[in-house]
Image 1 (cartoon, helix red, strand yellow):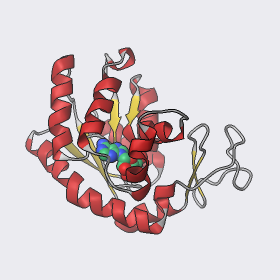
Image 2 (cartoon, helix red, strand yellow; image 1 turned 135 degrees about the vertical axis):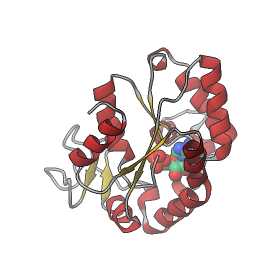
Image 3 (spheres, protein in one colour; image 1 turned 90 degrees about the vertical axis):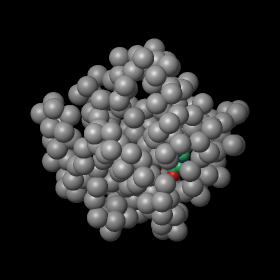
Image 4 (cartoon, helix red, strand yellow; image 1 turned 180 degrees about the vertical axis):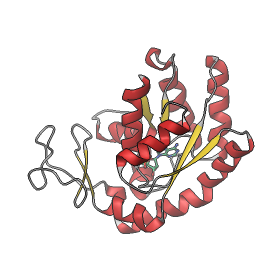
Amino acid sequence: MGPPGVGKGPQAVQLQALLGVPHVSTGNILRAAIQEDGSPLGPKVRQFVEGGRLVPDGLMGDLIAERLGRKDAAAGFILDGFPRTLEQVVILDGVLGRLGLELDKVLMLSAPESESVRRLSGRRTCPKCGSVFHLESRPPAAVGVCDACGSMLVQRPDDTEQVIRERMRVYADQTLPVAAAYRAKGLLIEINGFGDVTAVRERLTSGLGRA
Ligand code: AMP
C-alpha cells in the first residue's frame, strides 16, 4: 500500500525477484486491458483509470478472484494496488478464504506529498513493455525512447497535475481506512518510502523479515 507515486510498483518488481512470487498490480492489469483490442474490460474501466477515480468494487472483485486463482499465484503473490477500499478488504478476505490462503503482511510506504507529486509528474512509461523512467532521476539514454525496447515513451494520462490531485484525494478518502483496518488486524507495517530505491528496498525486506 501507499499513496500514488510513493514507489510501490518499482519496489514490488524487486520484491518479486527476491521472493519468487508474482507481482500482481491491479493498475497494470487495468492498463493492459485498456490497451488491448477487443478486451471486454478495457472500455468499462478506461474512464475511471484515466480520471484517477476507482474502478467499481464489483469489477475489481472479479478481476482479483480470476488473477489470484491462477496457478502461478498458488504459492504466494505480492499485491500492489489492491485492496483500495474497505469493501475490497472484504472481497479479498472472501477470495483468500476460498483459496485457503492468508495475507502475511501489509506493507505501507509513505512519503511527503510533494515528493510523490514530483515523482508522478516526471514519470514517463513505455506503453509497450511497461518500463518506467523519470525525467530527472532515471532519464532514458535517448530522450523520449525506451531503453528496453525502443518504443516512444508516454506520460500516463493519470499522471497530469489535475488527475494526480484527484488520485491523492481518493487515496485519503477511500484507501487510508484500509490501512486502519489492517493496523487493527495487526498486519500493517509502515515503511518510510522517502529515499533512493535501494534504501527503501532494504527497509521493505527488513519489514518482511528477509533482510
Ligand atoms: P495504480 O497503477 O495502482 O496507480 O492504479 C491506476 C488506476 O487504476 C487507479 O487510479 C484506479 O483508477 C485503477 N485501480 C487500480 N487498482 C484499483 C483498485 N484496487 N480499485 C479500484 N481502482 C483501481
